[in-house]
Image (cartoon, rainbow, N blue to C red):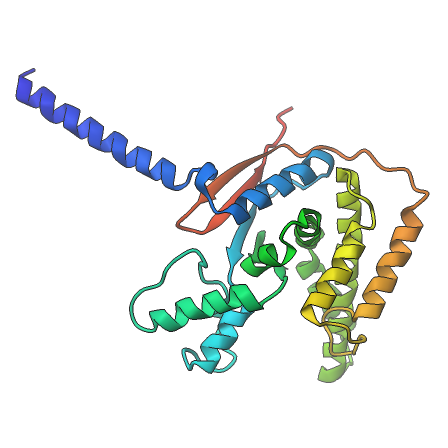
Length: 283
């Protein structure tokens, strides 16, 4: 092989290695945002003492609904059609037309929004970036938020709620169907926080950790109202009362040794996502 061919091959291999290395580094977990490191750490704790199922779960940190409201006020989108902005990548600096407004909306949402998470039926869990700022050093409260959203997915609440309403709405008016939907949604929210309390307790935290988180979050969000038929979530007094009753019912119950979930992680910077995949045990 001539020297110039060898040299060219060497340069090509070096370039390929550089591209591969750059791609690996971009998605390396040790340099992912601190919020994702916190998610990974807490889910690893939960997985040590809880069954997290066998389905892949994707976590993504988003700016949240405040950005959508800002976008609507700025006329960046039509009324009630601004959900696109809720899910933007908060770690990305946007450029181009209206870039200043979008970047400023994301900044303000981080400062003025509080705590919020959402669980989607297909396995994506979104957490508002402001949740991490709000909880700050209260790491166990963030664990409750994550556990709550995990329960929604593991219990298939979106599917089960829709199925329940479909089976029980016959003969009801639209207004009554809406009330039924909201009542079922409230029951699922209560179940999610109850089971989150158990998950955290299995992990080694006091069983009332998520009760304290609920009180803390409600006060910071300014949500102290009573439950109304139109509410998708319980009012403050009802939610606290239901969780207190549940915790009391568990005081004398022996802790169940649940199965450990072995998991692996993959971070994708372009997707703004951290993917948890359970390792299936081969028999």
